[in-house]
Length: 250
Image 1 (spheres, rainbow, N blue to C red):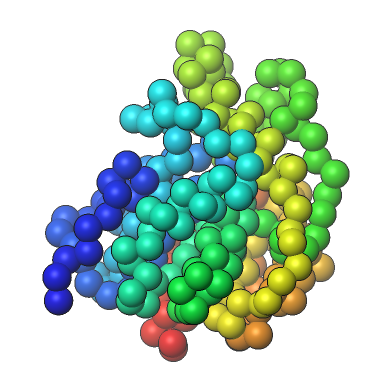
Image 2 (cartoon, one colour; image 1 turned 45 degrees about the vertical axis):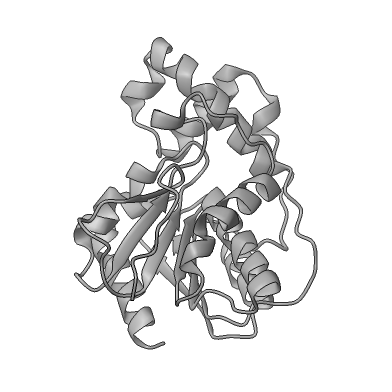
C-alpha cells in the first residue's frame, strides 16, 4: 500500500517514517501548537501513530493568516486530513481542539460517509452546551490572566514581552473562534466518543462532559484524571493507556 502524502504545513509527526497502526490526529488547544503533543507521541506504543495539527499563526506558521472561526479551522483541517480518510483514523482534541475535532468528524461523516473510528474529546464541554465567555474581548492583561489561571502556558512566556507580542494575536484569535462557536444541530456521529476531563477543570463540569453523549449513536464514556484544565501535562502515560485500550477494542 502506498504511503499517504500529507500537507506538512498542517500535519506534523514526531515519529520517524510513516508509522504503523491507526493514526491518532491531535488537535491543540487555543494558543497551542503541534509540539504540545510531543510527550504523547513519546509515551505511545509503537503501534500508535501520533500526528498533530499545526494551526496558522504560531511557531513556524507565525506569519500565516490567522483563522477566527471554528468553521474556518474545521474546513482547512478537513482538507489537510482528507488523504488519511480512506483508512481508519482517530481524532484527539483538547479544549478548543476538541470542538474542531468534532466539527472535522462531522464533515468527514457528511462528505465521506464515515466518521473517525473514535473521537477523544479532552478538556471541553459538549458542543451543544454553552457558556457566555468573552475573554477575546478583553485587553491583553485579561487574556494573559486567563492563560495564567489555566496553567497551560509556560509562565516564562507570560513574562516575556517580546514573546507575548508574537503569540497574543493567535491566542486572541483562537479565543474568538471558540467563544463565538455555536453548534448547529444535525445528524449525530456514529463513532465511539470518549470524554477525558480533569477532576478540577473550571472549564468543564460533569453534566457538560456527559452531554457529549448526545452527539453520537456510538459507544460513549467519560474518563476523569487528577488535575485541572491541563491535566494532560502529568498524565501522558495514563492517556496513552486509555487511548490505546479503546482503539484496541474497535
